[in-house]
Length: 134
Image (spheres, rainbow, N blue to C red):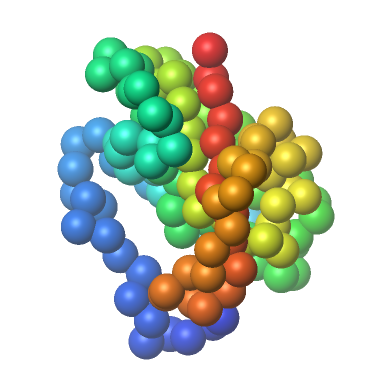
């Protein structure tokens, strides 16, 4: 699902092996149908970031077209939010595809006004989104 199904596309991050990184997957009938990775990273839109507040960036969230709309993505996202909250995270943020904004809004995420941009990796329209966990 990521990068338009391009099997040669780079879908990795230098932070993948960090101890603070959280990789999640949803498996159905021995097939990965949803994925999400959370990296500890300061939120770019916070003007006066309190250094004691832990923020994580969501990247590489994708759900197989065959199961979209069945709640698998929401369950993986909820699990990530719960796990990161237990780790002390206060804020989550992401660069979300515009086509997925309804999904994130339904999960309690908020779109940052004026954050519209084109992803250099996908050339698709995105917005910055966030969610507070406290």
